[in-house]
Length: 326
Ligand SMILES: NC(=O)c1ccc[n+]([C@@H]2O[C@H](COP(=O)([O-])OP(=O)(O)OC[C@H]3O[C@@H](n4cnc5c(N)ncnc54)[C@H](OP(=O)(O)O)[C@@H]3O)[C@@H](O)[C@H]2O)c1
Image (cartoon, rainbow, N blue to C red; front, side, top):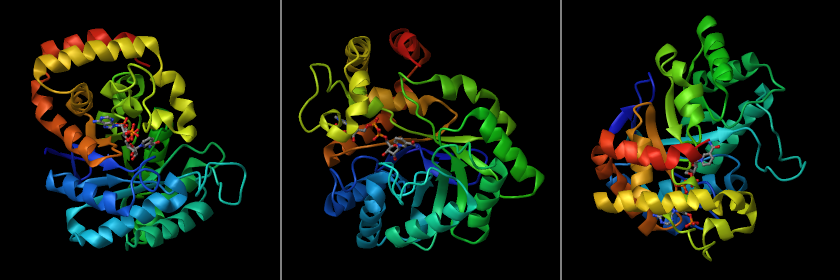
């Protein structure tokens, strides 16, 4: 495993990490999560991603139960969570928040700490931007969360470059804890934000990245080439919004071509796709996802593929995927 600084912070995260979206509570119970976390840490993974909204808080419960069973020294692992929607994105219930105001943020952290059974969270993210709360209020609330000892670092997820810079400037001006990381979607078919929009932020403010969906929800494994297999994410009713992307004929054809590139390197197309994300020096950690231990074990093999991505191989991958990328 390789370790990289989270942007300009001193925190060293593993180049590959493991997240719990869709999987924990729905596909992965506490026993399976415990086995997968153990396998991940054995392979050198030290960072585990979660969010308050995943499975309406139950993903944090599952991860917390697994941590309890594993009894790892707290110094050996980094855990994150994210705030914005509250405990549910469904409907207009009392649980749905869609805010980054001070009241919500200062209470949300306590809920996550209780569900995970932890004294502090290493890394907390604002899961989306909130156009209805002044960025200044959010920056003060996130910085206070750190000052109160409930979190150690903070960052954003899917914020625009302008919003990230505004938050950083406010923190700088008031000597507050600055955002150190952004969590954007980044994979072979989704590139522009990381490669173009954020380009100045890496040098200017030392922004780190923990990127999500390296396999485009499984499309980049090749498993969707003949339709939606039963038991896959694409077959889940709640994931219907992924349907168009998973069935896109041009992307499916590109995955077949990428599979041939992977075969020439002796790896799977999934390993190639994950290694390609990790190859970007601005990426601190690639957050992977897995519904089964075997997927995780295979995906972790991507670490060995990173160095095989020579300029010539990168050019072959680019020729296939770049024309389709957003
Ligand atoms: N900040 C955000 O807004 C945001 C958004 C999304 C995700 N994330 C984070 O990023 C993490 C990773 O995202 P993701 O789960 O979408 O990643 P992904 O790598 O794009 O998709 C993972 C899914 O693909 C399938 N898969 C993975 N490896 C496979 C293999 N070797 N063979 C066959 N199928 C395989 C599994 O689904 P099935 O087996 O069910 O098909 C697995 O759950 C999340 O857990 C979360 O922590 C953050």
